[in-house]
Image: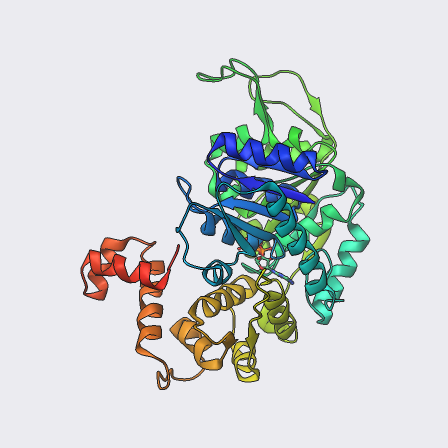
Length: 438
Ligand SMILES: Nc1ncnc2c1ncn2[C@@H]1O[C@H](COP(=O)(O)OP(=O)(O)OP(=O)(O)O)[C@@H](O)[C@H]1O
Ligand SMILES: [Mg+2]
């Protein structure tokens, strides 16, 4: 199995990693959630062993983000004594199981293997799944057909579609189903980096290139050699880098910052945009010649509301990926399905999965997601008809109200408490009582 270990305790993570490797697995140890996210985007893993209490993002938050990249990932949480009340709670938060520290390596291996076989079993009914892409609509079938046609082409690919439609998923499928799959899939987001940093990220620099450049740094173009470079939100790329990228695509060479020497690499470029790139070209914000180069293998992913027949399948897939060691199964009523199918999903599949995630969190003793639960977790404007609270317990209403307001306020407890009209300590108690997490 391929396992990633996330723990800020260095000796523990290295110990676990070595022990798992000795047992014939491939494991990798990282010290925090962000590193884990980068690794998981770059290569697929079967399971993650995650410490719950870490500096920065806590374990469940890390698990949630990892599962967004790879929903079938088996999450085994490591906890200190008594920090989590039950396996049910861990399962609700997306974990397969949890072990108390110090954990016994044989026990960990047994849990991981059981989880692995469980996932294989749970995913068996999904014949329509292609590298994580689920769907039976003609649109999805067409996308899979195009991916198969262009996956081994050296030409750039351009993936277009609204937020959350699965552009990155398609990009990874293009890479992992190609001859390049043994090499790196490197992702970079143009919207999240400033221009000078972006140039440096792309092409790297030589020693002494600028103040502070005390060491040589390879750019991602070099790291992705023989593999794939996924450039996300390319429409946000600054014109000066657009020029360097165009040059790189045209002649296949680049110059690290401060270097006079041309470097040659073999990289497949996949770019993604979530708004009309043609409009950017028209408004002269995006170079026409670069657009022309990128727009060779084009994949358009339509919004979820235009392929509603995929929704039931996506729901089944979401629920199947919620497997847990205690075999608890979450089901969904036909009414809830109908309601979910009628929404417009401006955030597409990502939003659908988030709503399902919140519905799972709102479950109490009965593991059935009903239409009422869905209504209580749907953002108000998404509910197709006026929201009635009849039949919903006060506790559920309170929980959802707290969760919604926390999210809107970026989990700022002071501000949220003010809006809810309660004091900070009361809010903190309620957050703990409902087990809410960012
Ligand atoms: N057809 C699909 N089958 C299964 N999961 C999907 C599908 N489409 C999207 N997802 C899931 O939805 C989430 C969002 O997908 P992804 O990150 O690929 O979207 P995106 O188009 O890159 O969005 P953004 O523009 O916001 O970056 C991921 O968890 C992904 O696994
Ligand atoms: Mg994306």
